[in-house]
Length: 299
Image (tube, rainbow, N blue to C red; front, side, top):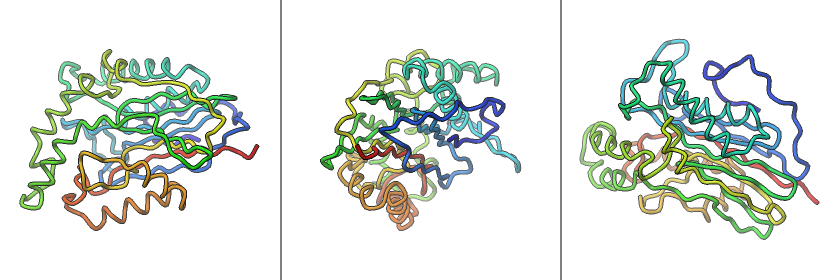
């Protein structure tokens, strides 16, 4: 399954023949645009490979608006990454991350961007898994998460949320209700300062060599795992506390009650009641969402 705009990728490439692993199958996917003009999330599932990507909106005027096909740098970075990983689902995940980072750099050069102007760089977070016979290989950077649900019902995050926006969101929570305009208008300088810390304090794929230092990867035994969930931060249940932006226990409870779509409905309902983004501090009313759920088949 490929879920990303065809203009981002080489549409002439044929996906590999499906050879699903007998132990885990894709149980559910979710891809939804938020309140922005472009969906910068992407996902792909091919054979034993699943990936979600969350492109970040650039801080300069890179958004190309046209009636036919608006695009953005974040969307392109996410699309390139999804394409590289899914184009060779048997490749080592770290190698795919390196290739994707290189391709993002080459695409920006072709576009004529000044790579020294870091606010122009196309960037994306991602989370990918590769299901093997008795293990699950994983790879991740940025705000996309991987969560395992064990047969005993417990949840385990394989990745940690970097939390680079914590202070900006705290400030917005304090001043938002008393301000006119959006968080981007009121805290533009603070947001730009955080973006300048890419691949210095938190990781994204953006063509820089330093990006690879922030890519995490590993392998876990699959025997006691019942579900594998990959998702972008748009699926995080809204939090009133910027110091604790993701509640793994609540996430597992919501998933068990109705899958990814149930989580989505919970998220959107809370966001709808907070249009100013003050109670649940965030950057826009509705964020883009991408998610993949893998389910273990009965033994």
